[in-house]
Amino acid sequence: LNLLLLVCMYPVLPIMYISMRSEANHAEEYVYGVKIPLFYKNKEEIQAIQTKYDKMLKRITLILAIVPLTIFGIPYFSINFTIVMMWMLLVVVGLEVPYALGNRELKRLKKEKNYTDMYLDGIAMDPEEDDQWILGMFYYNPKDRKTLVNKRAGIGTTVNMAKPIGKGLMLFVFISLLSIPAVCVWLCMEEFIEPDVKIENHLRPQLLSDYIGQEKAKETLKIYIEAAKER
Image (tube, rainbow, N blue to C red; front, side):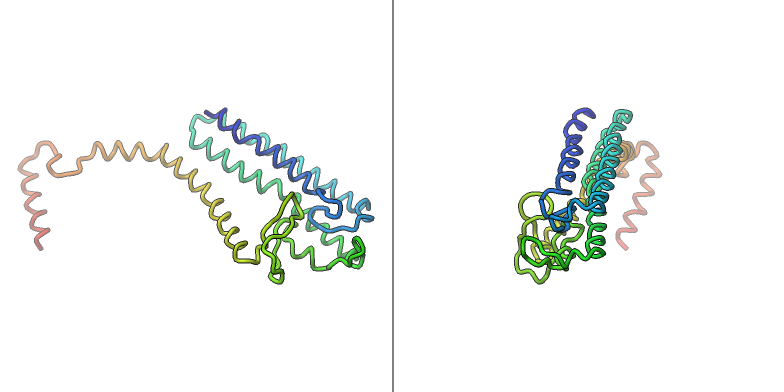
């Protein structure tokens, strides 16, 4: 069962690694979600940032590759399931950390080098455009009437988080993420606590008539209980 659990979940790691590595420089004009003029992309300082966070991404991936292997030494399914699910959350969040840090550092470098005064394809670059992308991945612009916009990272479109549908989506994702540890806690309780409770309830008499012996004491106690109910 542990092997099946690992085989089903482990591919998430290489998929996320390949995805985040490609998203770091997926389009000609973007690096870590920051719009950079094409003729500046090969600058030494930009290349240094990319190298730095590419190495960080590799280190995090290698560490995360080891964590799920610990389930083979634990005989309890609920604990193993909890480890794998928490590991998946770490994979999804942890592999995005280098991208987010690279985005922050490139934004700072872009302002320091005054890249905002440059032109991209003959169009003046909006100095506030990068600030509307949180961590380079989440678009938040109350002034934009559009609900869907093209992604800076990945393929397709993303939701404008300033719109009601965007806020609703974020709430749904937040609740879904919280439900994962809740399910893990429930499974652990089912495996470790529930059997003891069932045994205890089965052994302990639930009614006065279930007690064996002490008939005189039972009769006296029954009288007191009936009197208490009539008050």
